[in-house]
Length: 176
Image (cartoon, rainbow, N blue to C red):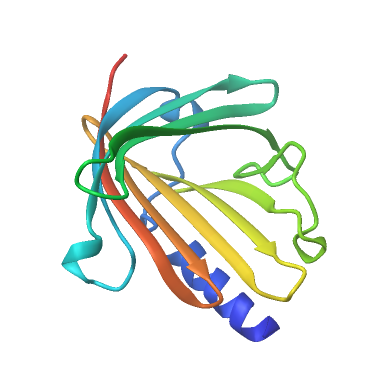
């Protein structure tokens, strides 16, 4: 199982990164909004949904603070449709490696607490999280935020036990 976790993690970390000199962290600061498309990872069109996204990346002591919000339509039937919002904030502190940041309060993934870190890679700011459940099952998530001329391209991918369970692809525009 450990080999599967490691190979999945390596793939997630390498996937979608740019082949350029690392951009300075300050280049990523700002407010970004836009739309994206999510799927369940099974390529079934019935599992595709739209998302409105907002990302705020701002300076924090020796690192950065990242807030992201997702707005989406949820329905259990045609008559029961509602707008849902999910939001999260993490603060990252620079490590001895200039391009790696650890989330404050990050835990031990083998004890069930997510380990979350970020790194600069070319034009991308990549945030990864790894958590191993008490039953041995695991989750790996990766957010790849790549600078574009107008804002950010965002790719999110979630693996559960080696299977892709969610992907989101979004184009965000810098608001400020």
